[in-house]
Length: 294
Image (tube, rainbow, N blue to C red; front, side, top):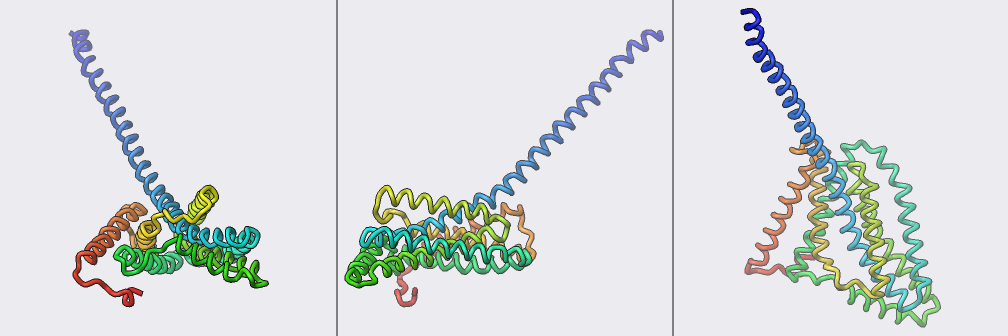
């Protein structure tokens, strides 16, 4: 009977061990699954600001570099490439000096204050781009035409060809164009990347835009008139405004749901609102005047 009892108890013992082993394995798998899911969320949360920073910097810089390239190309084709490249190089040197001087000063500013100030500036800057893009799409403001800008600059340089200072004036035109557009690029890079310590990624986006415009420009050897500049400005305006709202909120201590993933939701809301405004203006009977739009 004792032997029988031992035999009868074995299956139950084995069953308990099997159940405990199953629970242990299941618990480990569940923990691994939960850990993997948590890692995926953290990865997406960290990847979102990097991708959005690089994209915003690339698109914003692309537009500005195209405009600067048009003037430099006009100088090079009309006068000579020496004053064109000299003026552009001097402007790039000035921009590099500005970055080296003022860049380290950002580290001295408290991060909350930096986020708030940069956020407000980005909202103003982005809304300005959005406003102009919407008014251009409505025909209130004329679209920026690179061919027209090239022709205008070429005519101006030809009129100065008899002047003894022709090379100096040509170089000055290239210098001013690169410096003015470059200042906006520097602002975009610092504003988009500075508030979250992503200046390096923003700089890489701007560098990629510069290299791409130079390669295309050297290949076609003409103004990049086919670039959908107004569409790019509209998208960049949406991104800059979204960044501005996000960082202004962080600067005043807002805890965004989903952390950095909230950028996607903010961008979607700003986009829907902008498209609704654009559609409403197109459907309205009264068209705003150019004077009111300026």
